[in-house]
Length: 337
Image (cartoon, rainbow, N blue to C red; front, side):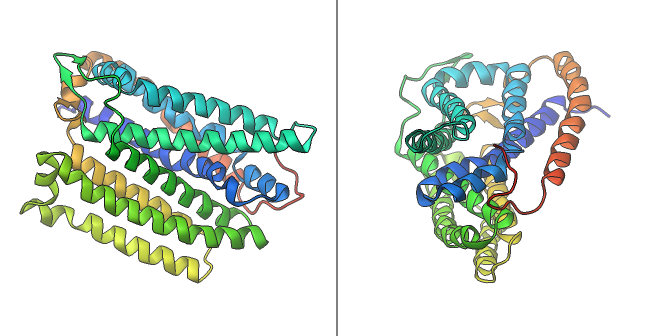
């Protein structure tokens, strides 16, 4: 039986991107929450909840970007000039945030501590917002002629891309609050419960608004979601989003600790599935499919061998680290510093 290597690679890269979004999403969410939580001891606890895992979380960004470059070079060559500004800002923000993460524990004065905390929060917000901008710019379509980008310098900037940027900030904020509910206790946990309500509402509203806006962008999107019999197959997605939103509210009301985070992950997964329904098989909408952008099958086969070896190692190491640092993080306990 012949295996469609292009489809296999598309699924692998899509999985890597999703794992990056949800795993780096909650630690970016920690930085987004900094302005709402001013106490230094609480901020130290927040950072210590993600300190053992945040570097590893970004591994998936490298895997997704590297895989895209190696297996779908046309996509890489097309999207890089189309998204040059937001991608550059995102990477600079991640670097800036990483420096602040390290330096906030090593500063000697309160003024420097406040400055590095502000840098950590700003870097988290800008990185999240730029990721959402890139997503919106991709979904709204990229102009391609032949095998080259044919759009303008600012095509990525639009009301829809700004909307998706804000939506991702809200979603990351929700993941951050739910992570704190799981990993902390006491007054900080109670604050996280309160903040999770606001971010939960903002996330659900953002999902609804983006979902309503997408059919206006393309007849293909309308055909996937608003015509029969396609509607019969895609209707479970918004229904499940509604049910998860209801379950999230109940979990917060009942002061459950793990379920809010699982509900947040579920909302991201359903949003990702909805995005896949809208775009597949396009990798650069509206005209470039995964097969158009793929490299030669021999190259895909060669790269897949290495991936089959490395991917279980990455998954195993990641699972071990999360298991090793399980449990609550408390103020005064040994931490990152």
